Image (tube, rainbow, N blue to C red; front, side, top):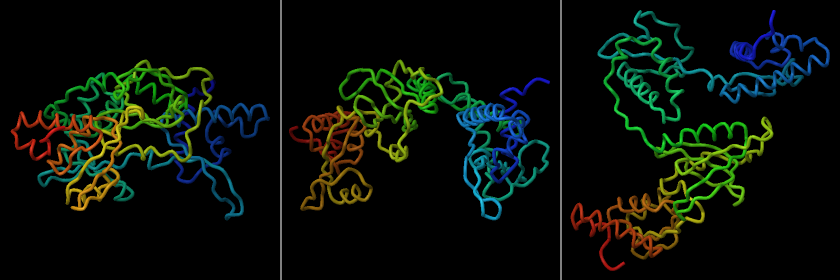
Length: 387
């Protein structure tokens, strides 16, 4: 009888972990998995070989997204501590999908047969989906999965297959979903794959990066800390070696991304324990994708009561309260145009004060908008007068 393949070992390991709610010790896992069983009662050499195999399989499954947790737990009524493994079920299992028929129709868990599936264990684990929503989701998944530049095309195809499996065929004949492919997303897809692999393996990457602030392209060496998608763009947060500090890089400005291929399987760096990717998300468009050399220290005058709104919503940093209730607030601007458009959207309640070049650019933008929509726009936005 031939030895189990790696795929068979992976499936066996997942199946055993998925069938238990409580953590399993290494011995318990090995006894239930044929490929590992010889290591339970075998000699030291066999035990060491199986242990290496088990650790490799576990690490590779985690890299593929299987949430295998290692944790300490009590046994023998709390008198002993043991180490075990389990699947993080909330990250592994999808919620129960419940299709709700509209126009007074009956509820069903999917499928044209009308047979009710086993109810979910709790209401919190169920997700209600109307027929209209299901059709829209299927149409959207079909469209984006056919776009070669979409970075999650394979995942979209997988989601489409899973969602369509139990749904009525009539739902698949939805109205077309129009989608214009973004050129930057198409160009960044290959970089995203390479950066994702490097991040999971903790490998340093090199790439050429175009800085908009200095209008220059140079090579960067970075330790990837995290990736996030915001405002329709992908961004990398990483430790910039030459500058010795974390930076945010926009994937659309990268080229020639090359991960370090030396010492495969050995991490090049460790992500700091206090690093939180959430601290970089949720930022405004002008705060992303720039460099320290290109950062503009801008000051904006907010009229009262807009100044109260800016303060309560954390827009900028107060530098000077004014006697009339207004405020001068400071901003760090990485991207000039999105920032100026945001100030312009406040319709005269805010005007750029410093630096002089940014103030001139703001008034130039006001005049361009006024030329299209009338002089009242220029007056409302505070664009009158000498620069």
